[in-house]
Amino acid sequence: MKHLNEDQLILHYYGEAPDPAAIESHLFSCADCRAGFEGLRRVLAAANALQVPERRESYGSEVWQRLRPRLSERRRWDWKPTFHVSRWAWASLITAMLVAAFFLGRFWPRAEIPVAKLPPGQVRERILLASVADHLESSQRVLMEVVNASGNGSVDISQQQASAEDLVAANRLYRQSAERAGEAGMEGVLEELERILLEIAHSSSQLTSGELNEIRRRIDTQGILFKVRVIGDRVRERQKAAARELARRNL
Amino acid sequence: MISMEESDAAAVLRARSGDSQAFRLLVEHHSRNIFRLAYRMTGNEQDAEDVVQETFFKAFRQLNGFEERSNFSTWLYRIGVNCALDLLRKRRRHDEFQEPLEPDHGRGVFEADPHESTPDRLVFSIEVKRQVTQALERLSPMERSAFVLRHFEGMSIEEVGQVLGLQTSAAKHSIFRAVRKMRVALEPLMSSLR
Ligand SMILES: [Zn+2]
Image 1: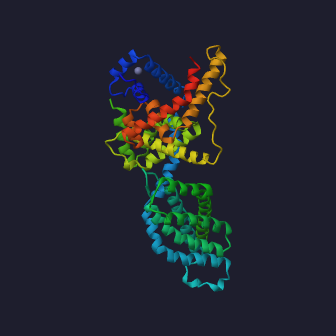
Image 2: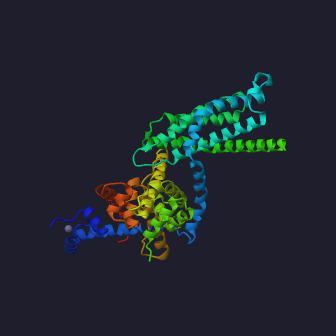
Image 3: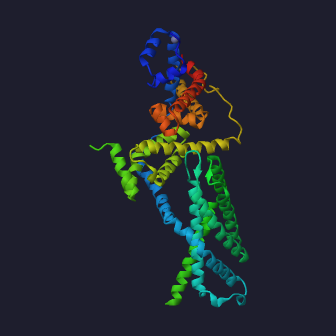
């Protein structure tokens, strides 16, 4: 009988050889193959030296505690995403006017704005801040979805692309207004955000895992998610302050 | 008595309808297994913890894609393996910019006779662990996954193929390649035992 090859020995070791009895009887009568099998067994037994560090009994609930905040965060973002996006279609015109009015009203001579056509100052500010905050949250959501996208072979990001396209238009508006208002920090972050959104909007809707990783890498290295979250929090703070101020005045 | 699989299936149904306590149950049932898998795939605790978090996060997001007639644990393993593969590939690409590792079979540390005395035996076992770790690191991500699933997790080659999205024959060849590489890396050390 022919000697056993290494593949046959490996299958036999794992109990998956098609004819184990034939292999056993060959090993019994052939010293060469027996030595080969012994060598294989020693090496594979040595692999078991790699021990896994113990986890406590409570490990499962520790994992859950860490995970839980991320799950609820997603649920909030998931809330009717199409509503967020389609709202932009009609909101962008109104927003354009509000944004310009807000920043111009604050930093440019008052005489130049058609104040009468706009909501009163405090209301205007609150609406504007709310839409900037929404914009930043929607952007975060799209970036998160791209970062967490997965699939076999190619990954479909067509939904995120449609959202990114809508967000680019609004983002450009906010960025220009921030620039005119001399809000350099905000402008810088919005500029970075715009570049990433553009990249997502203009990539192919079926990404290879390589292309996807490239986008992820850019999102990661620029820390853009973190920056967007930080200015988003600041805007929310301002929005709350504006709401409190409004409530105080209306008392 | 209700089997683990049945209770998993029931929990998945409840979790899908928005019951977070049901998902919690799934996390608690499977965390240790996923950690073990992740540790063997990545070779260190911090990466393994990250993979565990990512695995359950993705599982939660993809819960609607889970087919009821399939096995939850196999499905979860597939997600876990993919998360670990992503991490290994990221790491690998990063490493390409670093100096390549020199192969060092049995360098220096182990020169004494392992049968001689207890301290030497200890040195030997530490050296075995070090070399096993290194040998695993030198496998391609796919070979490593296939080997971990067959050797440590005790899955059949067919199951390994299912988890990795490979034909059974492709899974088999990944395992063959992995074992051959392990053998080349570890044989010199092991034959010093004889
Ligand atoms: Zn023979």
